[in-house]
Amino acid sequence: MKIILRYKGGAGSGFEDHAGRPGQVGGSVSSGIGSKPKERKIFSLTAQQLQKTTPENELPAIPSDDAFKASWAKHHRGKVTGWGMGKRDYMLRRLRTSAEYQRGIWQGRADKARGLQYSEERTEKSYNLGYHLGYVEYESNRHGWDEATKKKFDEMYVND
Image (cartoon, rainbow, N blue to C red; front, side):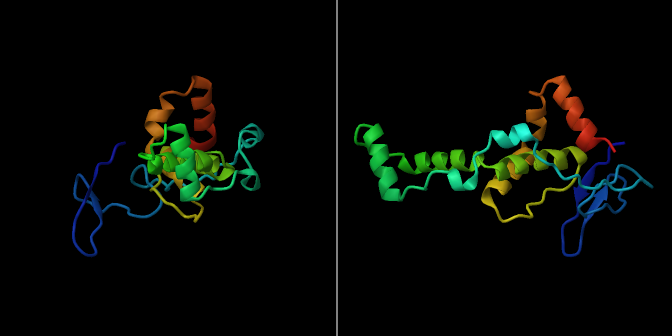
């Protein structure tokens, strides 16, 4: 059953479905009238996924802007143009190696697959970045999974 929701603007308003009935605005999604809302399932990393991450205390120190500019100029024939984007990319690579990023990306995928609303409940930047990417890019990422991965993910996190 597919329910199309549209937002009714204004103070105190919420959502209503295509027939004008009030919709649910909470953290869980109902799949039809009289059905139970889906509960959140918490993702836990496997041992193999943990082996691929870098512990927080083993990450290299973040260079200062001046040090990064000097390194950038050395690798780009003395030019410093673009160093800001280079540092951004460096910081993203650094965040993506953490276990919190991996936990966040898979939790975002699990929440999106279950139809739950987007929620960043943690303060860790790496977790929130992973959660955002996992939630937003779930459909496109799922197309690249093999059938065994899709089946295992659905059994653990989608099917009740």
